[in-house]
Image 1: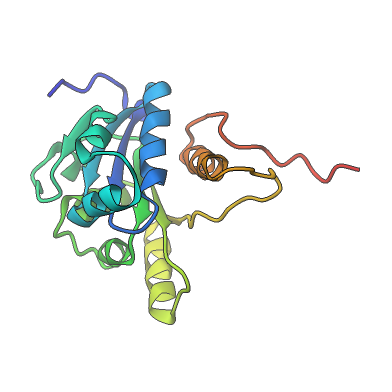
Image 2: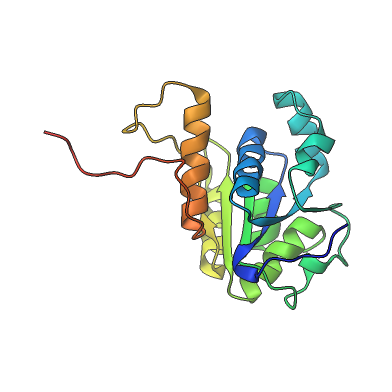
Length: 196
């Protein structure tokens, strides 16, 4: 494993949990690699299952997109400490189970521990929660996480860009998530008002 070389402003923790939408996390890793953002990746066991169910990617191929990877049970990893400076973290996609762990500070996995550290250090935490419909329990968890400082970012399609393919929908979502994290990119179409 190489030694991290980027400044915290170019260092991002990425979690992929077991919710549907694994290709969102994969695409984010592809783009951050091109943008030279140093990524520290954790994929949950359920996330690994979802990758193999929903995509043609092998888990090892997804891990190869990141600069550093960690098992989800590696609670002693560098990203589990606030002294390891990062720009922030994104969990994409974020399952309700992972949302619940983050909202309740239940840090039994590396993904939830790294998210908790991100919040306590006042850094950006974006949760791309992938579930529908939502019952009151889900909404309560989102409120708790938001009150702690997380950004709840469901992957809602943007239709004003007139997407023609699933890839365009994925790119638009990933681009907007990265922009919310303060990482400039050209994946999404900026709204310029109604054309007349």
